[in-house]
Image 1 (tube, protein in one colour):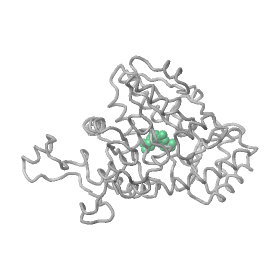
Image 2 (cartoon, rainbow, N blue to C red; image 1 turned 45 degrees about the vertical axis):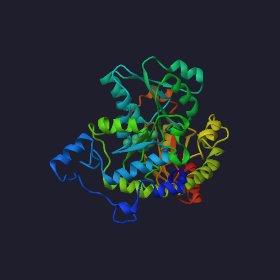
Image 3 (cartoon, rainbow, N blue to C red; image 1 turned 135 degrees about the vertical axis):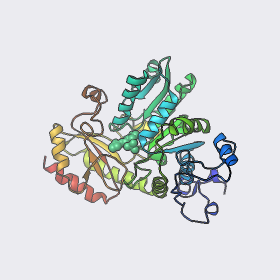
Image 4 (cartoon, rainbow, N blue to C red; image 1 turned 90 degrees about the vertical axis):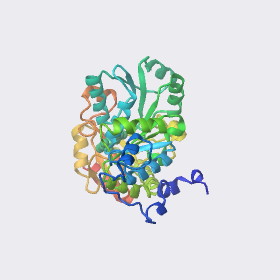
Length: 394
Ligand code: LCS
């Protein structure tokens, strides 16, 4: 069977790795080395000049990390991919590569709190401005694009409001204007959504989340064209330096093997918890792409394979009511991050999006009584029992 015919469930296990190139080791080895030796001075010269294949120094490339890069490129259906020390290292390397002083970035209406923080740094220090756009119609998007817009940056679903952006619609308009579209695919993983196949140019991940899946690694990824990935590898990856270690790459390769199995279970469990929460008298509003009443339900059907493992909801009451509720949970852990085996709940206004000024949070529709639930892999009955007993106490 040709490699490019293999299915996702096979690719997560096999792509990018040939045991016969590594002493027939079934599992990829961890090349735990900072540097690589050259047989001669001339060989070193040729490798630095890019005339000879081979490794030089692990910030410039490492064999274990390369297996991960190739596997991610296959899963996201890109020509190439790069691994970073964190999701934010990936976001910053991509945005710094695509923009120059005086440029403009057009963002979805809502981004992860530290991405918002990075946009502020780019604006303050390097005069790279940004705006947030709903991206809910061609007209609104056309109006929001400026002459100096250098890239469009999208989260979908948006953290934590769970709004969706129609990627194909944005990609068509951007293509006509020659503007690259960057998509943070963290909430979906490539199992649920592949933005490059919808016409977008770059995909980013906080691989800390579903790609790792076990809550024990901080990592980031970017995928796209060979040219752009090579440019980033030579500049804002190599010279800024936020690269992934070989051990963390190995943990991601291990986690990836079960990505489809885990994602199916996250999605099934989230559906059960949504069914329980949606009509609960203490729940005010609920935001879940699998909700038929979700404003973007049709976009979900168009671009996502399933509805994902995240549910946001407001409890009736104030910030304090939301805090009192999560303090009562016994099984579900109060923690930021998402995509782990453990079900996690967090309070965006005081946690992941605390750095976003209150007025901006309001515009992003992050209310003070909003909670974000990352549904894990436990028995859904136990999770519902925990939610039920905690809701009964507020
Ligand atoms: N993009 C998204 C959509 C994220 O949710 C996060 C982290 C990042 C990028 C940054 O990735 P990192 O550097 O942490 O690997 N989101 C977090 C969250 O929602 N809770 O804790 C971290």
